[in-house]
Amino acid sequence: MIEGTPSRTALRVAMRRAAHQVFDRPLVLEDPVALRILPQEQRDEVKRTPDGLRKPFSAAIRAFMVVRSRHAEDLLSAAVACGLSQYVLLGAGLDTFAYRNPFSGLRVFEVDFPATQVWKRSLLAEAGVQVPGNACYAPVDFEEHSLADGLAEAGFDFSQPAFFAWLGVVPYLTERGFSETLRFIAERPAGSGVVFDYSQPREVLPPVEQMMLDSMSARVAQAGEPFQLFFRKEELNSRLSEAGFRDIEDLGGPDLSARYLAGREDGLALRGSGGRIISAWRG
Image (tube, rainbow, N blue to C red; front, side, top):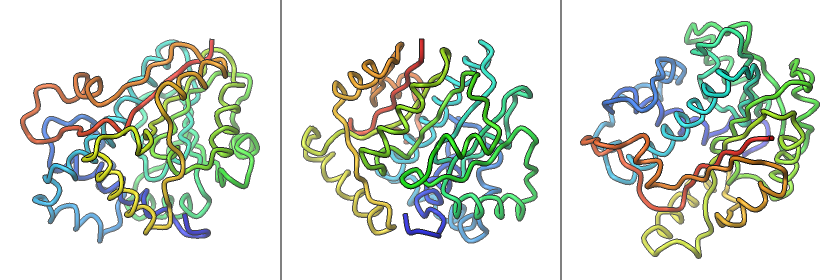
């Protein structure tokens, strides 16, 4: 990410979530704020490019993005039913959960780069989206500043469990940034959990998927936010277990498709095996 500027990849992700609301039926993720929060130029772009959005590669990227958000929110709902009251979005981007949060007792902490948060809040104001009292902002540069300090300033209760959604962030981190954040989450009280997506290394992918990864890598690098971190499934599961997590669930394309995309006839489908979503809990 270019220092002092909002995230360009966050905008592209938000556009794909908005496109899902406009073009895909049935909805995997119901998000009435997704289109509203976009700048007018991007709103218009989403509405006028249905053919491009239906291309298999574009549809696959969109499918993964809405499935990972839906999966995170499903896990959150189950945790709230068990009494959890803190939800932390690490690298929140233009995620809109805080503004459609159905749980009155749930505090939502949005953690992101300061410039991205300023930009997001201006978009919310322009769209007339009300910021509820249980939405909290914690501006943090993951590589340069303390996540703990940022959350403390936002009113986070360190004595209570929390669920962390780390979506669309891990591939952009350094090993140090990932390890320090994972350690912080592992130190939270029992009942805390985390969900995040990750990419497998290029060398374990078949040739077609290597080409897909190369294409995506070139795009994000051009935006100033290159991919840096990849994990083999077995390696990552071992790291979470060694960090003290339990109930580890690591889902690939077939599992996610069966859970969220079964029976669709509109072309919204996951492709390839590179992207996975993993969740784990503190005992």
